[in-house]
Length: 122
Image (cartoon, rainbow, N blue to C red; front, side, top):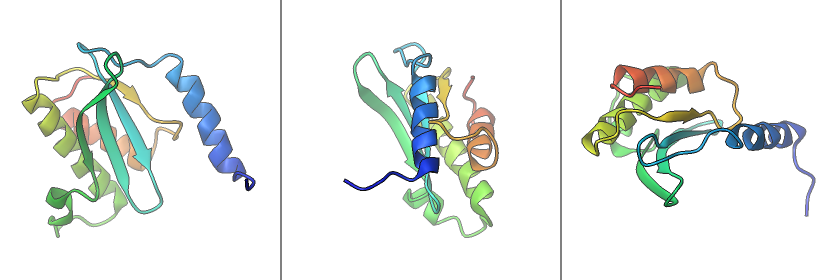
């Protein structure tokens, strides 16, 4: 087994620390974010059942077909709005935000702002 990148290990430790406190219930599911170098993904998860209620990502067809998006932050904000739209269609209005160990700025913050614009409360 190879050595893990120190930045990745630090993010994993932050993620574990956050997950001790953030738990998704049916009334208030968890909005989990994952960010790679190129893409960003978000899911709304009910941790009591271990079920993903809705998901969206920068690879979703709705996002890929938007040619007017310039830059990763704009894409992240569009992913947040799409996720909020899908969540509200399933009857979810309030979520617990799980940044997944990523720092709350840049694309993670843009996704959160987009989800709030879309009508999610957190």
